[in-house]
Amino acid sequence: MSSAEKPGLVPYYKLRTEIDSFCESLEKVHKKHLNCKKGCDLCCMAISVFPVEFYAIKAELDLESLSGLPVPKDEVQCRFLVDHSCTIYNSRPVICRTHGLPLLYMSMESDEYELSLCELNFTEYDFEDFDEENTYPMDRINSKLYQINKNFVAGFEGGKYHEQDRIPLKELIER
Image 1 (cartoon, rainbow, N blue to C red):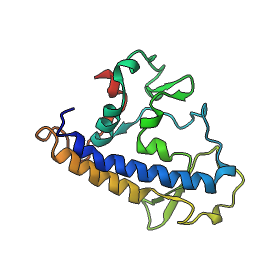
Image 2 (cartoon, rainbow, N blue to C red):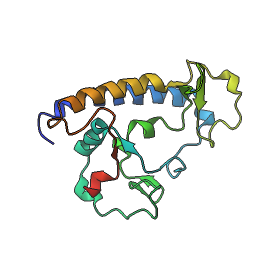
Image 3 (tube, rainbow, N blue to C red):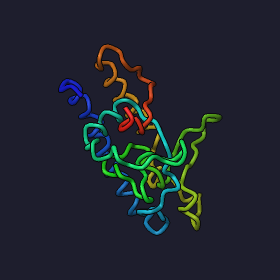
Image 4 (cartoon, rainbow, N blue to C red):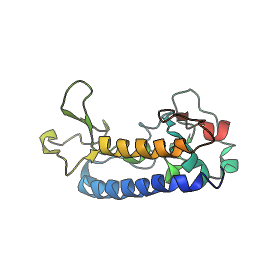
């Protein structure tokens, strides 16, 4: 990564800090309903991310140390999940940071919000009790991430990426 690209990552890192802070507050609110913990990997799968996330994560990792990770048995499993533990946990993408929490999305079919949560969490909860105060507004976060990525790719190596491009996360060590 060139030194010119690193300043373009600052807005992403700032957003990630905001996300972590909000997630921490939601985890406190919903503590008794969350079953997420080390070893729980139902949500861990191969994903692709925007270029800004890919390069931010790449900048943080010692890729040499990750090159010896075992290859997953199938294309669905995350490349960085080893023995039910995330090997890039501190640098994980936004979607991995928010998964398990109650997430609000605008429905694709209507003007209604939809609630998304892990099937292992909130097994004894009245869903009418969810509101904007105790859920995560993913549309707002995704919009911010999209704009940060748009600005990042606009200045990246003469148009190598477009604002909607995604890079498989596994390519961190397979490139």
